[in-house]
Image 1: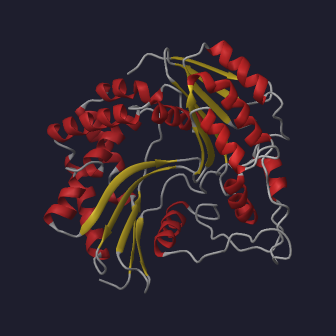
Image 2 (image 1 turned 180 degrees about the horizontal axis):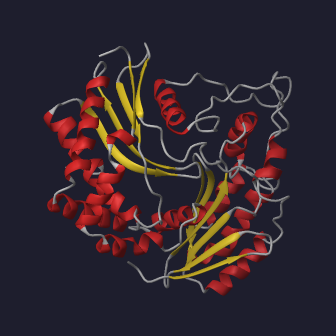
Length: 409
């Protein structure tokens, strides 16, 4: 791991600011993370329009001027929307950090936005079209609805709505410093970077937190069982599970993580060998611990040929039972530990990846050094801890198994 100094502070306007100093870094990395969950169906179309326009042009610079300014700084600006956040990223030459912060402030505070859009199309650009949910989305919503209950933004369909899309009003509400995280990674001293941030973003204010954060699921623990959906347009069999899990950085998470890797987290995992190599049932197999503002759950994700949904479900259930009852072998734990530690180093391979990871951790409520210290946590977990986690969390009687296929098997 490279040596870096981290300084974290909250500016007077409420902006949570993390400054990471990497001496001699030739590039500066900037990440601004805004809460942006689709918590209100009526805002969905406006959120799509705002995300499409934010970061592209301002009231003082058109698209070409923004692109030319970024090129002058030897950098690149981009915007990404996730299930919970809107992330503005910039990578620029080290000497262009101050100018990059000025451009970021212009994009955030003074974006060029369309006028209010009426749903009847009489004014402004056409609102985003509403499309029916595909089989994969249908399965995902059903999985979470049956496991954790409803209503909830992650399980409810988004109605088309008839209200006007006031994108500028949404900007005033959503693009605010309170609740946002700014991470700057550079070679400059933190006090100089903070002064630059305050000079450029100090005028950024807002009415308060946007509230665009995912609420907790109605139920913290998944309701177990079997759910089988069928759709004529499904061209493959899909499986999603929802089992109990423990979020990072709570005690016990690391042991569960290793059990999850043994189960389905790498190329020689039990599920991969059973479903792909031995049975030939699935061509995509994975297991992961999913964690967001709504909750935390252990998820198995498999895709196979049409008509194999029930067989995949049976094999997944049997694999869970075997691992929960017998635990992993010492060799399986050794491989999982090495894989998890190696993946941690891979995630920090470049400064761009490291900046994105650290900003995401802070926005998700994790310590800024969580990933860099994770290899130490992995080394402290014993084989017995991993077996205990498997017995407790991989028990199929505590897991919802949901499938979607084009016809009954």
